[in-house]
Image (tube, rainbow, N blue to C red):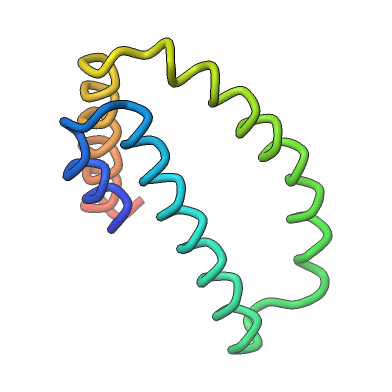
Length: 96
């Protein structure tokens, strides 16, 4: 949920700044989540292989995002951020 709030805070910033800031926040959050899962015994070696299988898709997304975020203007990106925050907030409140 913090990442959604961060996106709302950065909604008026240039697209490159918003995307890079939120991406770093996601990266730190995911690494911390994985570290805590393994530290508490909730994660195991059987979960590492499926995660590794997803790395090529992550790399492709990173590669494609660089030219893509230069094509999205700030106003359109702001609308996408607001829609994403609204939908994810509604899903969170509804308890899905």
